[in-house]
Amino acid sequence: MFVGREKELQILNKQYESSNFEFTVLYGRRRIGKTQLLKEFIKDKNAIYYMAIEAGYNTNLNLLSKNIYSHTEKSSYLSPFPDFNQLFNYVSDISKDRRLVLIIDEYPYLAQSVPEISSIIQNFCDHEWKNTKLHLVLCGSSMSFIENEVLGIRSPLYGRRTAQIKLKSFTYFETEKYLYPMKKEDIAILHYATGGIAEYLTYIDTNTSLKENLISLFLKDSGRLYEEPINFLKQELREPKVYHNILNAIANGSTKNNTIATKINIQTGALNRYLDNLIELGIIIKEFPINEDSTRKSIYRIADGSFKFWYQFVLPNMSAIELGLGEDVYDESIKDYLNSYMGEGFEKIFYDYFDKLNQDGKLPSLFTKRGRWWGNNPILKREEEIDLIGISKTITLFAEVKWNKDPIDLKIAQSLINKSLLLKPKKAFYILFSKNGFTESVQRLSREEDNIELISFLD
Image 1 (cartoon, helix red, strand yellow):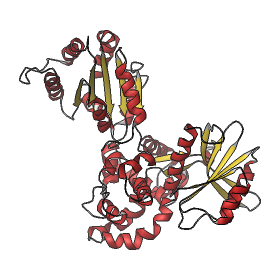
Image 2 (cartoon, helix red, strand yellow):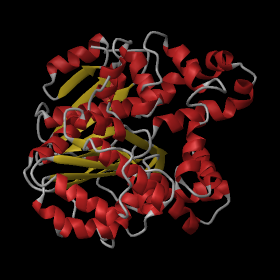
Image 3 (cartoon, helix red, strand yellow):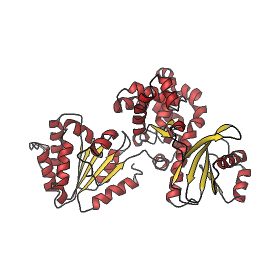
Image 4 (cartoon, one colour):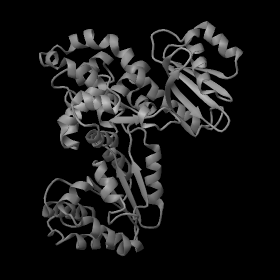
């Protein structure tokens, strides 16, 4: 079942409907759903799709030639084009009077085997294809390659693309559509545990329980996500052991540059390159308190829920899992800790919801900036945190997000109001976002005050 990706499909279809030459660059991490998006896009269109492979010049040329011949109903036994210049000349001929989509998926593999391919494509973009109805789509999973070698200023293709799409993981709302009719609470946990990665979601059996899915995916040595984070690091990065150590340090509470460096015994200057690569892949984020950019206050967090689940629950229990004790691991080491694990996951869900409300104009103002805040409370002499602060021209919005088994009570509501006063807002608005509703006293407070909104996840 194909769900979501409405915005991305809209961009692709708008380009397709143009009568001009169009060149789209689509990229994103592995298993994020790029290929499925492209297949959905071309299902009713005149299109040639080719997935490049890690092979030599001739192999890729022969396979792409075969795909083109098949599309044009020519015999697949015809000799391959002698080179890519003649292949692209043929593409020019068959797209002169009719819209044609040419997709080269995993373009970095082609560029690896044909180093001059970007220069060849640049020449066709600048000359032959200008007067055709070709819609070229280059797609890739190597984000650093696409950003540097296709979109970067030093690339021969710089400035040629007419649209670019960086595909991200599913929002909670897209996951909910895909996993319906599972319980909302279970969907939320599975959304975070898979990181909202499209392919990982296809591994979930919606006819079984949350427990059975987590055991099947993570807590069996045959589970499809049992070794996935480590395999991902090996596929995407050199020195995977160093990245593994960094992520393990962050997962165990080392969130500042110097504490991570100390934990893994590396110089802080050398550490930055590794951290930047993990940020580029979307595995971690570097975060500042909103409206502050002091490096001294920056922290690193694991942004990908599947990595967080793995480092928190799988890695420490691998010996037991190898012995086939996955169910015992779940019962003793995971079940009672899921609420704590979901703290950050529920915040991410609320951020998705906040953005949706903001886009739909359902908030008291248009908020042009939002983020977390933490800082010192000089009165109580402790550090405070606020889950979300939204900033507009007229209002500062403060939100508290709670994934608890109990309803949000008056103490939590009053604490948010008190913490907001540390930032001296001219006009404040409050949102309380709860997994399990609100006590009667909080509901009464919301009825009495016009700047407090209560949102219950299960409702």
